[in-house]
Length: 459
Image (tube, rainbow, N blue to C red):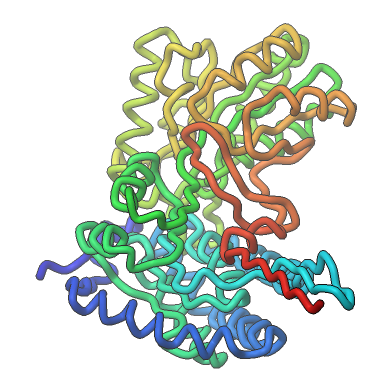
């Protein structure tokens, strides 16, 4: 069987290599998870919460090892210190709300009858995690799934194979049984065969639209529940009353952080025409202050894209836009680390239209198109002119206006005066080609459990 190779974007070397499980071995792993899940679910909720949170403690203790590993695996600069703040925030919140979210909903408790709605774990939850935030995205489902009493099988992306291993090491050290939480290496064929055979009770996938379609095809006819967070083309809108400096700092960070490889990163910006020139001037200065280079160096603010092939897509989108009349505001020569491969200079495009790929297709890289708009109505029309709907960011001093505009936008989350942020108290969801499902918040627990009704007639 051929191995799966993790090619580091830092220098193109093979950083890790693993042999995927064959179908028989994968089926045996799932069978062990199913057998172990019963005893795990039988533990008191408080004990499961304590054990899982001890796993988060153990993961944080690995930070000195994990941070440079992330740089080598997917290119994020070490200066940002990994993902531990977000991991702690999300895990702690889901642990905090678990007793209420998983409690029985008692409809009646009288001498005549007891009627209630209970929540039971799905059973075995399969998590297919992406490489761009390998711990944050996994934790979104792994933590509440385990707390709710499920067994979890984690398949991590090829680009971040080691992240899955570290998460498993941390949970096992904390006392989560090895069969209850398993990190596995699988190829696509085995993954799809397991899903098609109804090996899992719920499948959570974060990745591309094409990957989501493959999951749905594999699950067709099995009635297996799925949660799919797929592509995005998240917009930002700067109203005439916005704080200009705050909007530039927020939106440009949202567009360029992690080399633009964020699920809810900003990929297109619409600015009221009265603010357009000033916004663009400041945005260009913001980008020119970035340092593209080796992510292992503290001075680096932007590392390489996770793989050279991802950079090819962005370069093609930029070239296509320029050929159709767009104007690039950043001279690539200002970023000498751009090597034509994984190291890609950030770019701002103006004079763009929605006929261009860069304004319609997911870029997932350090490029953003900026367009002027005359009013809210034009901004709403452009923000909705997309196949995707994950988040939308509105910059204004008027919360009422933001709420009214947000009600018209086809998206999962509306953010005002911030972007590229996931609040664990709010449901993480999307619409259109971004997929479907609900993660985090109380609704996240509903996806990871099933309802059971009790009608106990006493007299």
